[in-house]
Length: 81
Image 1 (cartoon, rainbow, N blue to C red):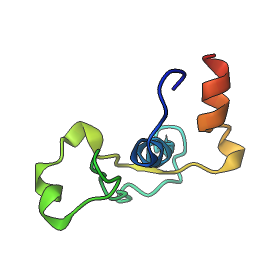
Image 2 (tube, rainbow, N blue to C red):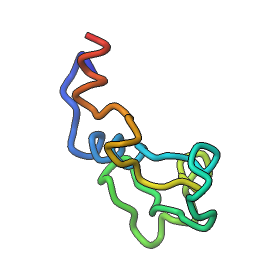
Image 3 (tube, helix red, strand yellow):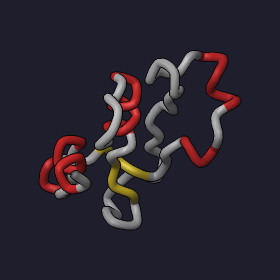
């Protein structure tokens, strides 16, 4: 974050990971599962979904909204300068 440039796919992966888990917001649907992402392209291809590491698939969460107070990439970058 504070050294080399960040690629578009890395930024996409970061933004994809900014979620609020059901344990924080119980109104989140248990069935919500955003598409897993690949490191290379920031997208999933149909044949990659079975090979995804379960630790990289975010479940039981929802995308964050500004009122959640999660830092965006630029705010985190400033924090660690």
